[in-house]
Image (cartoon, rainbow, N blue to C red; front, side, top):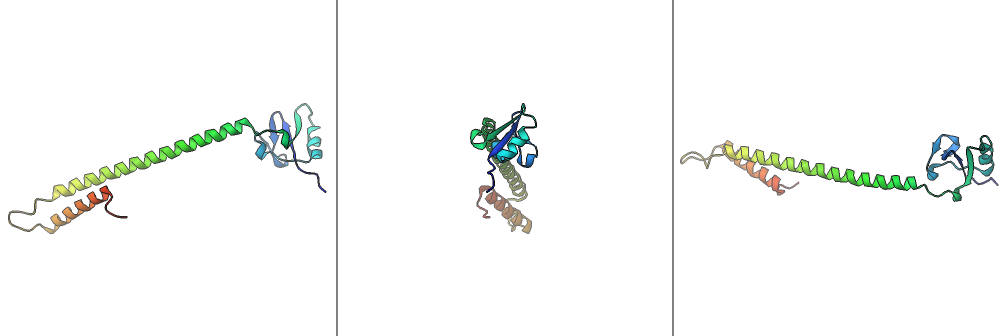
Length: 141
């Protein structure tokens, strides 16, 4: 039977990562070693190394703080994205409003004295109505 890998190696406040590949402050990503492996490594510099069973190490408060900060930042990012989308939508509405004004300005009140409206006038009137419908959300998707 193999010895369980339940020990952490701490050097000057930082835990060894798996395979002694760097350091971390987080218990969750720290490497796990057998008691013999951990003791052998700690013997190199006993004044700087500590061998701890994983049950002896509480989750770091720094990690909890970082996770809370991360959650706050994610909420702020979401809020900023919503503000950007709202600004884009307002810009779209303003653009549609401008287009409708341009089209409406092109249309004369039903043609010239006694004549039918031109094709361009009917098209402009229909375009203005379509733009206003889009702006109000009635244009479908």
